[in-house]
Length: 357
Image (cartoon, rainbow, N blue to C red; front, side):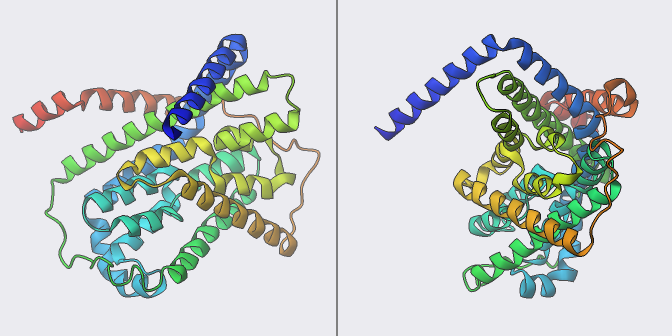
């Protein structure tokens, strides 16, 4: 009965969205167009290399090597094995879905139990420095210092959540904590590890871009609904897709932007659930952890501003124009290269290529 009710609700929602897409096609088209440009000019350049390096970090065995060094510290402070701590650190600087992907890899490799991996997901969903400082701080707000403030609050909130999680889980995960391997896993050729890392990053970028474009189209539809108050439309768009949402606010609304970066947006939530599909991480738990992260970030930003107040030049616009497609040749080149690598490295091509070697 409950299942049938859920299906009925989803069917009605899908029908209403379909009608809206047709009725407000111009707004949807503009939203999709802007989102495609946003992906090429901002999202992919700020995430692609970080994603590739993060995957390379784990697949090459570097996480295991570093884990052996920091293991005593990480077990006492965070109740994490050294390898898990290394993944946590990488997730803080590599972008939203990357941490979830790496945690999923740890779980599949037997380096973390399901409960440990789910606990890590509570505080390892973070925006990267390139996105927060460059895309949000410089490109959107026109202020590098504001981007640094946002990043500091963002990471500090994640660390606070990790420490709180350690206290709440004390005694539960300690006994089952996986030992950090004393020897590195079987070494793979660096060329193979590099190729796999770039390919995984390419797949991630296409997935992330697809979510950004999809929610950008829905945001364009919402913007066309004249019966909704502007503040309601603004809030719905902001909570749906963080990349588009933060562009609606200026430097005077820094705590709001900090909350949105911590919350991540529903688009990021879906990306995380998809990246960590093996863990069966429930959406209510993800929603709660993202809300806590966003709230902590907003509080820390407010505290920063009370201690270190900013000087805002009102003569300059609060937001800078988003980079245009024709002004980002490196982003276009990266996108084309990413597509070429992904096509070349499809399953059949990959198998035949390595058989020849």
